[in-house]
Length: 223
Image (tube, rainbow, N blue to C red; front, side):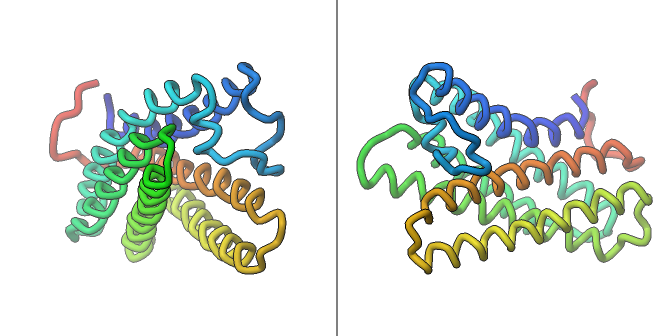
């Protein structure tokens, strides 16, 4: 397996897990028929714990946490070779975020106020720390973007656009909640689906960067 395969895995597996859980719920008749990206009829968490969907979601997301740690390790190595600076903070933040994902997935499907708190605690810190690690990665590459390949700069620009979307979604979520409108829960669900998708796409863009990289990795990865 090559490094970019790891990046593609952490991009695609969460997307497959979330959408697979939702469509399984539809097939079993326990999920509402809608387009969650536009109608917000369900959150990812609710879709993932209805019926047998939780087994698919857990089965895919638990190994993803280990792949995420490996991804941030590879990312720190790649960035060091490009920027000639250590990036321990990026690896640390990304890895801790992956640990909070374990917390979230582990408590998914459990009942009670405490378990609900742990799920929200886990997913909030997973999103926050992962996005922070992504932002720091982009910042590191922006400093040396003139030395990057033209196509890599295009992928970097796309990642920067994703960061802007993150902020727009976050501000929109806070604003809608503050207004207390009746459709605030639906809006939060819509924002969650978009946010999770865009966060996954970042890893896909990184995979394409790694594919075009001519740098040598400091360890052997078997084909």
